Amino acid sequence: MSARRAAHKLRWRGHAVHAVLFDLDGTLLDTVEDIALALNRALAEMHLGSLTSGQVRDLIGRGVPTLITRAIARLGVAVDTAAEGSLLERFYLHYGRLHMLDECNASS
Image 1 (cartoon, helix red, strand yellow):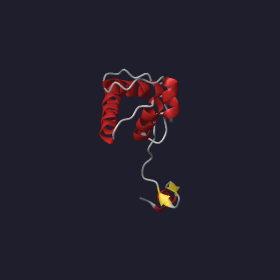
Image 2 (cartoon, helix red, strand yellow):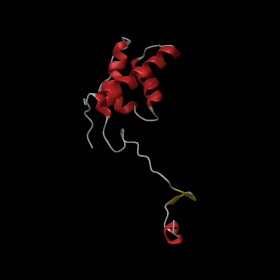
Image 3 (cartoon, helix red, strand yellow):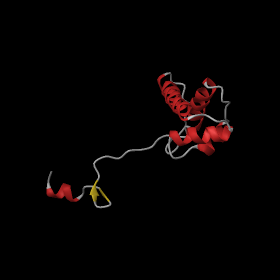
Image 4 (spheres, one colour):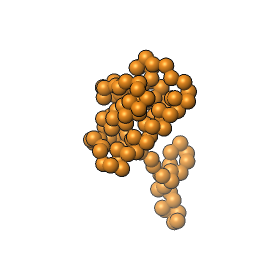
């Protein structure tokens, strides 16, 4: 790399930037409908009830494990750690299937 090109290299907090990652879900795309659908499918498998898209929107933030914890609290149900882990796995399965089967409702 030439000295001139190196001088124009992007830096952040004193470090060279080699890549940039984007959090698309909820940041650049409105994916609440997809998140709610996957969450409700996982909840239904465990007979825990369901949440509206508006309720799910209020729960989003800090990642999927936090979403699961908040959803359980919102529903007012008690589950053990193993069941919460299963719910997390099932959410990821259903969310992935939405994309594989092109059932997504996300809008930009």
